[in-house]
Length: 234
Image (tube, rainbow, N blue to C red; front, top):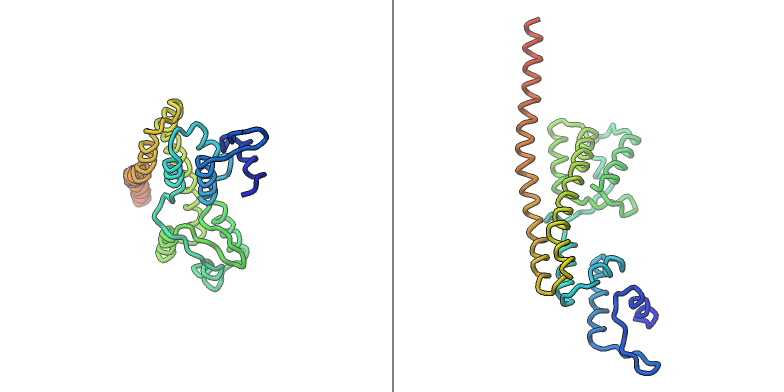
């Protein structure tokens, strides 16, 4: 690492100043440990602004801060994205697919985050599990456009749910910890709360969705039966 980079980290508050003797600045093992931590956090995908936020008044060991940031970055779902081609994505549409329709639905899938472009007609499919659901919908006779439209609605509501759980963590766990000065002994508790929130959020969503889905099906079928009965009586 260059001296210029080290001075830039100091100006951002990422690195404590060296011990100055005359015109020479001396850096010790604690500076080296902090620089290694910054490099690891950058490798995990954090930018310097986020690193400064997490390290500021951390009060904890470098190891605990690193464990927390890795827990923060850990994928929420236990899935392994796969690489797919345009041809594979177009297969469910059949031989008579409209190129303009395919392009519109591809752009929709990119916009809602189901796919990430890799170039050369290849894409990273973020959730193979979701792709399997989509394929079963196609086999049930549901059109690709309708399946993607439903996916857009689900993503919109999922964003709201995710924000609600994120705010819950910030308000109930992080803010009290931050106001207390981020004491060293509480870093493991905060990390554990974040790790436990993941399965709890999933369980809550599945349970509430089960209730909502039952109510929606009952209501829809009830309306359809009423309509049929009304038609027979006329």
